[in-house]
Image (cartoon, rainbow, N blue to C red; front, side, top):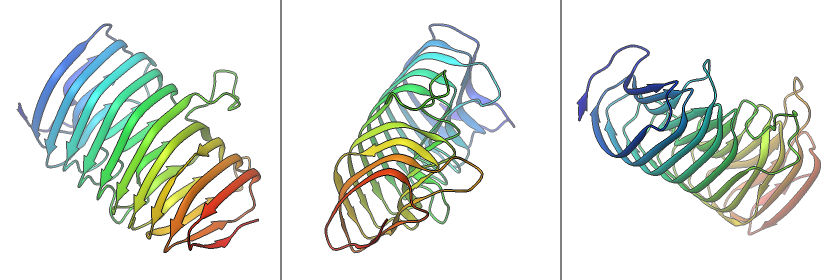
Length: 260
């Protein structure tokens, strides 16, 4: 389907609906949002291909009701002016893969969500010239209903990022996350930035070139804590400033290290 643009609206929308299924979709055009959702239960998106010339690919609204039980198959987005996939307020999110190419901001942006499982995230030139990332967590993502981050509930199998802005970015009181494997190269901004995040682990992988691997914190939020980063890092630098609490660095490779 070839779609146009209507301000604030999705070419396809499901608002406060249950059991919506879109098993297969190919979309072209310049929508405001390609697909827009909020307040759903048991939403199932299958293989979705969005070849866009602007807008956001898939969007779950911030100022709306929560979503429960969302599944996505293989999501492929090219040419979005903003994010390929942006989520808010999902409890129970399962994604097979997100592949984003030449998008203006994030490949996959997960916000204020919990109980998340993602197989594969790929960003090729995602967010070039910006602080956005192939994979970004923000706005209390992973925080449990009791306000804690102690139980890991966001699981990512693999992140592959080339060029663009940042590779992986965790910010604004997010966490409770484990990423099993990373392959990041030539990011124009930080390969990794972990800022005011809690219980956040990167278990293994490779980083080649790009902007520095950084753990940081802003003073308006509690300090970064409970961090685990294990990776081979080459032709880059690793910096921790200010010092995080309860952090483990397992850095190999030729990276210069300035850590606490």
